[in-house]
Image 1 (cartoon, helix red, strand yellow):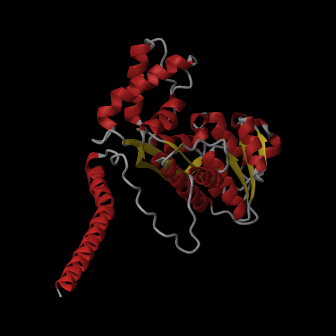
Image 2 (cartoon, rainbow, N blue to C red; image 1 turned 30 degrees about the vertical axis):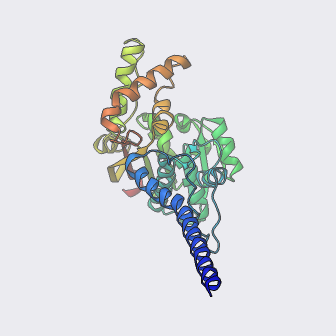
Image 3 (cartoon, rainbow, N blue to C red; image 1 turned 180 degrees about the horizontal axis):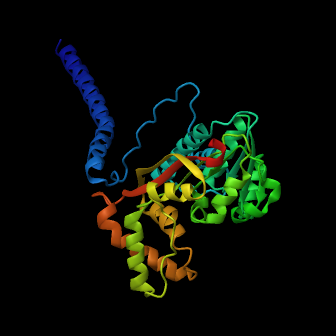
Length: 350
């Protein structure tokens, strides 16, 4: 009898020990998960990485039709949307930068707006001035709408890229359109984009656009380019950095950044009837890398010395950090401005 009790007590004790062990194992198994949850909560506040040894969170199951987008796949997708590998797209280990994504989305919106403003019929012939990102997209969009397109640019690489995309692209200087008799009276409408901005203040360019319009057509001329106040804080910082590092001998090249009034006056002086012209302000979110590569690098092409150019850009970033960078120190906000217009050849309306 005593032996039986002892056996029962021993059995119960061993069962309790095993149960306690299972509970201990269960607690130990839960501990890293709980630790990971705690570290995630701390990361949101402090922005620090989880402690070493913390297991990664389990990925959510993919839905039907979904796939994992790695950086190369994202880059290839954006290049397809933007229109070629020559367009600058910033890719980091964490994916696509905010500025590149915003810029791609914005280019899609701008293309749609300009195409809607043109509203070409299938029988129309459209002249596209400038084969930058937006100009190429507009040309492709007009082709999809059934109209024919001739696109011109003085950048042979841009012309070749456009040809590879099925666009009738030609190496022609827009300043010489008045001398190109084969273009006179051959187009129903024309479109100019950002790359043409320096030339739209030229009388010869606007006269050339006017000369290519076909008699009896609607003679519509639409466009979008950087406007007054575009990236103003960056330009002020860059000017100060150049004066400080290089000296007053090297100044930033003058750019045509018109107000809506200036652009309207420019068009009216060359016999265009302005139907719409307005400034469109916007704010672009960017990283410090985007700030250097997408904004400041194009503004400093006149500095031939690479090392000197790097110093100027670094100084400009430091000067505008307190104005454009948020409290986290990682996100920058750049104010941009574009001017969009729609005009008609005046003599075609009279």
